[in-house]
Image 1 (tube, protein in one colour):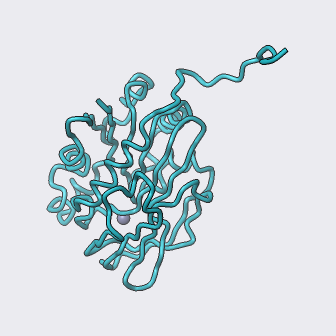
Image 2: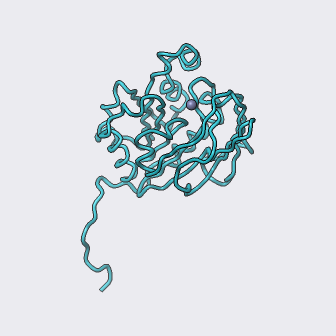
Image 3: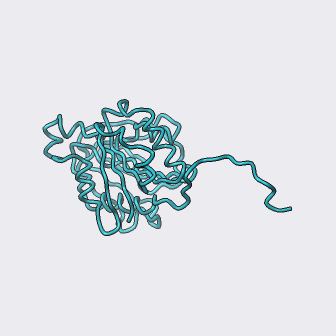
Length: 236
Ligand code: ZN
């Protein structure tokens, strides 16, 4: 089984009537319901329990999924540091939508991760620009989202190692919506859809992409600690 850990800050769903209607049990619960299958098992954490994301939890996590927005700064640096280190050791990580500003994502990117945003209910076409990539498997030319928050370039991230999707919003913006990164032994995928007042995270193609990304990010070269050892000559 692939062991997935989902962190969702779970603030909007309890404080905002519109969000409550879209994700009544929280984004983490919806994602767990959509993602669990014969191969994927999910456990969830929220801001209330974020400190329970310990090294032990991360060692038993193959891929972590992160959704946050208004409470990034309340995630303790120690937790963000643990997540980053777990990725460097080989754990996979998927950052959704406004997690572009989360502490672990920024730590893994080393840049501002700033972008432009406009909440106007635009239709978005999420175009596949790398159809051979495993994360795009089963997706046609684009994913058609009735409404999304418009994210725009420039996106202050390092050049992606692989770009899988480019989003286009009906009032003009384009955005690098699906970005893959290799960070030491771990794989990181950033995926833009998932604003809390819209239905994107219920779209079957969005769920398919997240599932594909779970399989892509599954650890392949994991180690239990990061070391910098002195070694003998490999060849005499
Ligand atoms: Zn948003």
